[in-house]
Length: 188
Image (cartoon, rainbow, N blue to C red):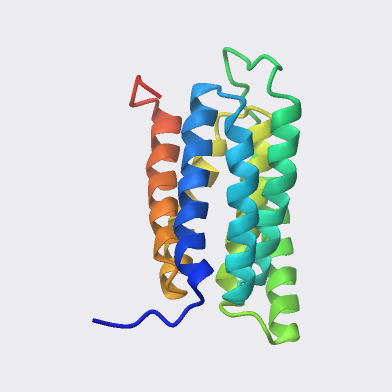
């Protein structure tokens, strides 16, 4: 049996953050405005956990999600479109190319600082999540494809940092993104 040498709050902080973010995701899919509260708290806890595990870009991403939770709470009463719009292929190509450039720059910056672990993966999941979020808030159905890729890569990132609750959350997110794209489950 191995001994967990992390501070006590990290032992319960990561599972708490994962649970709150899962509650948010299911609530979001159900249209529950209250779920944004869980998203804000869970994101704050994950930001601290990632910062302490030297995933600095990922920590910044979780801070961004605190703002997104406030935005979502504020606009929770807005109607969701019945049919999701489709973006032209060239728009996706240009957004992916732009994200690739930002990913490269962020990776370079994280390496230059010298404090971050796994800067390439850290930057990829951060930039990819921001791109997927942009498509999501515009209600473009293809956002789910972005999330499938980003969440699948995030599983590896979290596993490499021994953030097993976070990896589990990303695995569930990957499955939910597949469901979101194909609308396989009627209960969500």
